[in-house]
Length: 407
Ligand code: NAP
Ligand code: MG
Image (cartoon, rainbow, N blue to C red):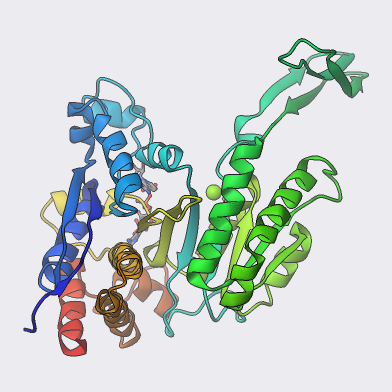
């Protein structure tokens, strides 16, 4: 084996739970450690560790990413009531991803991995459609009210300096109904616009932003104008990168996306992104092929798989059974972090290695060695045919073999 590739600066490694954690360890053992000499600052966010540290470890991990600029993360459990019992938790700890996102003021971009033998549901999709979701405010932080009987609903703004309030009539109810008030902040919308521009420039893809300013003349225009302001500041960078920024109405975007070849970054408002990211994910195939990256306005980055800890498979694993779980998105979390590190450190051989690993992974799939989720897609059957797939560890070993001959 050739000498290991040296990574100049630190990558923050965040470990997680269940089947995702099992895969994470194999990826490190077979695909990273033998080839790369990298200083990993390790944070174990497995649920028992979060309990032991009263969740302080999550914030420590977030601070480490802010410091070093690059991190990769394994999927973690977001505890619900059942998990509180299962793990005997003292508290229902909040989602680690929410903590990381809040600390880094980040936006999440999801991107599918394209393989020739996995046909997207939409024929025209040839390249990835990266989708960015603004993850603050709007419907997700709305004040809602069920109106029981006739009456007037008003929106009142009371300036903090004590000057005259502004009052708007929302509706004069003649009978029962429902109402809500929602908000967003300039700071959050601007961070979202900046992160979207930063990531489009990093990836050298056109940026689309869509909203409905024809209907929400103040609300959505506010978003549209901030995006335009942020774009104006970076127009030169976009020209240099040979990419464009384009604002369009959400209806128009949805119609165009269905006929588009892909290779774009689509930035969406909170609710649009929630809905559309699931459509794009299912349209491209398996959750096992969907990556996710958290980007801060100034370009700090944390990569991960979009899927969770794959609990159903883990239960099998716990019984000593082999599973056929797809590690591809988790492998791309590692390569994504390595590539970013290589770019920041100006070490092209690190980027080259990450590309070689991605290539080995995709070619393994394209040559027909696949996990059960992909076998199901290729054979278009609810259950993958017997013998059409390999188990998780075998799959990773086949990638390692191909990588060995690639580098
Ligand atoms: P999930 O782990 O994404 O799994 C849902 C189902 O999707 C699986 O049962 C499996 O389907 C399929 N799947 C997902 N990833 C796959 C892969 N790599 N290979 C093959 N099939 C895959 O979602 P969940 O079961 O709803 O959540 C489990 C735990 O993950 C929860 O505790 C949740 O809090 C956590 N979670 C964490 C994150 C994160 O850290 N970013 C994100 C989402 C969820 P089949 O069973 O049909 O094979
Ligand atoms: Mg959703």
